[in-house]
Length: 112
Image (cartoon, rainbow, N blue to C red; front, top):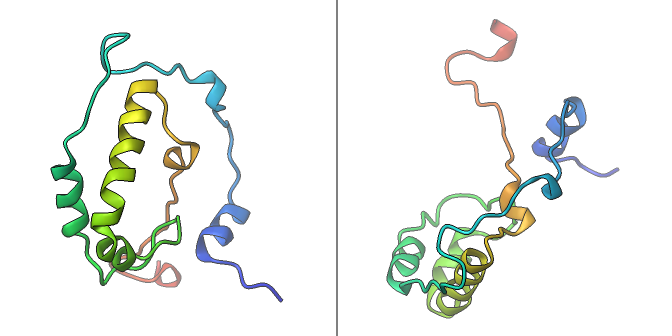
């Protein structure tokens, strides 16, 4: 028997009332046409160095510890990815998906 993750469980219970297709979204770059943007690698490195390696993996399944340990090797590919995405005015489809999980802070749902 296959075990479902919490995200799969919630997605199986709820329905999407209106789905917006990516073709309906207009891609607009945040710079002048023909202008090529370049990124500074230092902010990317800063973010990778400040990852909380005690956290669990994100929706991509990559553990923050792996990103932290490979930060110097990932710096150039991430910089290229961000520049290309910005210059084309498009985001990878995976970046447009959010996973929402209910977190009860005061009482359990059964007590309500």
